[in-house]
Amino acid sequence: MERKSIKLKYLFKFGKGLSITKENLSETGIPCVSYGQVHSKYGVILDMSKHVLPFVSESYLDTSSQALIKKGDFVFADTSEDKGGSGNFTCLVSDSSIFAGYHTVIARPVSKDVFYKYFAYLFDSQNFRAQIQQAVSGIKVFTISQGTLKNTIASFPNIDAQIVIANYLDRKTTQIDSIIADKEKLIELLKEKRQAIISEAVTRGLDPSVPMKDSGVDWIGQIPEHWEVKPLFTVAFENKAKNSGNQCVNLLSLSYGKIVKKDIDTNFGLLPESFETYQIVEGGYTILRLTDLQNDKRSLRSGFVREKGIITSAYVGLIPSDEVDGLFLSDLLHAYDLMKIFYSLGNGVRQSMNYKDLKRLPILLPPKSEQKQISNYLRNKTAEIDDLISTTEQQVSLFKEYRQSIISEAVTGKIKVADSEIVATVEQPKAKTNGANIHFKRRVLAARILDKLCAEPTLGHVKLEKLLFLSEYCAQLDLHTEYARHAAGPYNPQVLRSIDAQLPKAKWFGYNKNNHGSKYSKLEKSLEYVPYFESNFSQEQSDCIDRILGLLRTLDTEHCEIIATLYGAWNDFLIEGQTPGDDQIVDEVLTHWSEEKKRIDRARWLKALEWMRKNHMIPCGYGSKTKRRDS
Image (cartoon, rainbow, N blue to C red):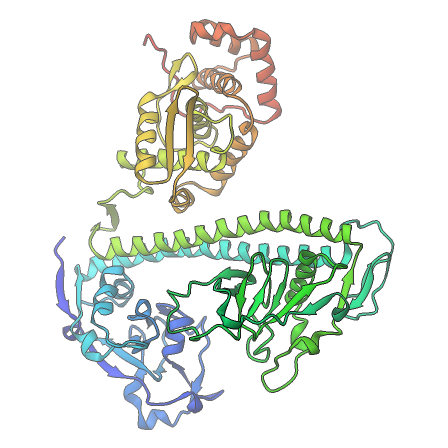
């Protein structure tokens, strides 16, 4: 398809937003979008039916009408604190007139060759943004001038193709955005669950049947009857050990509720010349950052120290007494942090606190053995949730990368337009008619199986093949795989060889074969398959696959072989229009599958059929018949 490459100055008229400051904003008037909203709020699309903006006075209609934008206009932020944000913009897609505000550049289409929705995707593509990021100037703040934008080159097809591609990307990005939103909601729910588990354990204990009593503290309420409540100064002392003579160089920092190492060399220029005023901390201490309580009500402010090091003396360091387990104390204070207790205790202009302000903070004290039990319980429970959060966050990141790659491939011509169809010229797992894509989808399915089960000692080469067969046929996946009747059950050696070769190349999963058998392992990009899996298989298919994997997770290879063989033989009867009995299915296996099947007792085959019915693993005549090896 023919494409044009033209500088933006021939396609757009450029202007400047209002020369105002935050002080000029008001609660009524004309909506106004400034660089802050462009960078952090609405992304590339601004829809006034969904988004709320600040206002400016209607008097600007008389004095600055050139800063009004309408549907199809673009507003670029003219400054960015990081190079990656250079080129951030928003496009007005609703029938509204609003002002472009401070630190913005307006780009209004003046060419009939421009369809604004397509250009919104084009401007958001990696190739286009790279041009801007190479041209911006600045050190701490990166500036984008009108000249920079005017001389940036846009490559695009004809207007009809732009409309088709934009509509295609609308559908794809809506689908991906919905998945991302669901996963981000899951992350928030997991964080809430984590918080609830911690708060419940350190304030109520682990035994729900114990008698309770009033703690005497309004914001704590009932506690176990055998617990005590003591002021902080009786169970934890202020750390006063200073790093005189820079005797310790292990620099620590409080980050997202954890004490982490900080690299002195890579933070050059951001750290003091001397660390003599820093406090020396030991493993078992708790650190509290109780500064700027008035302005920052989101940060996590407590952390548990696990190694000797130094940390700023602006933080409160607590040394646990013999009466309290250090980890339990840290967990309790972390719960207080999550409950936002410290904000109600602060004082002063900056609302900061020190040890003296905290000394009468009520501390809940179970017996020390119970403290350790609670802390151990929390380590295990929160680790499980943290793993789920981390995995889901990685998936969100991958979906965002996947979204960006689809946009870039579409607007740069790797997706061609023919009439009203989108035809992929690169490997696109969604296209069902492309043979290469069928192979890719099989690899995605294999990745799903390995992601769930590769840590299981029972998973090897043969079991993977059986799981591929059962997943495809039970979930009715459109993969068109032909399976032959081999000694170990339904088998397609070409498919398995392709999977074994391609998964390591993608750095998803590795495959190793030795004298002890075959083994799969996760590689550095093992979660990269997730967006492809979720965009190619329906939720119903995904649930079916995961159910099968759950049922067969711990079964050894021979059990999986028996189930897959019975399923294949049973399914073949149904394809032929027959409804076989159990004896007929087993006879087919023992007589017409492979001589090797006779090594397994008939009773085991019949028992396996009972198991399949009990677990609703019943074929429906989907797919192709298994081929006899002599056919």
